[in-house]
Length: 223
Image (cartoon, rainbow, N blue to C red; front, side, top):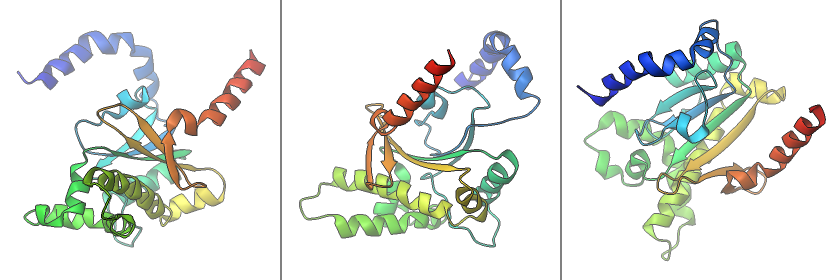
């Protein structure tokens, strides 16, 4: 029997009973804290990385954590983002890239995916990030360094693509939405966050240190 079927049985017999109240509450509706746009890569476990329960993240996954720019043509990403913004009113969107991303390797080496026409077209939405890396890289830049640059540049590009979506732009203008760009390292477990003001990535605990102190202060005042 496949392991995931065993997992369903364990969920029904052991996990669900312990969280019955949570699921009964979720059956009445959802109010996720964030839209989490991640790669489809099986090694990226969003709930484990963020330590969240069901109902806390509205998850969108595809090859390369890509957000196509808004057009009049309906697509799954466009429709789902619109629903999250206009119906759920989700206050945060996270675009999370990751190390060893096959989609980004394909974007950097298009000949490797020429036999996969749909994949090749899809990762074309990351081409501008590839162009930036090729512009910034020097003869001394290693392949690993180029790939790290691409992971970061792709996250930054998809954040820009998000801003072309009217439902996103409307909530940004109203101060009701915050965008986050992350890169997750599978081997080390480190997550880096993008700072738009400095145009750099830093560890999440450093990036959000001020926010954590503010929340701690608020909590201590309420105790």
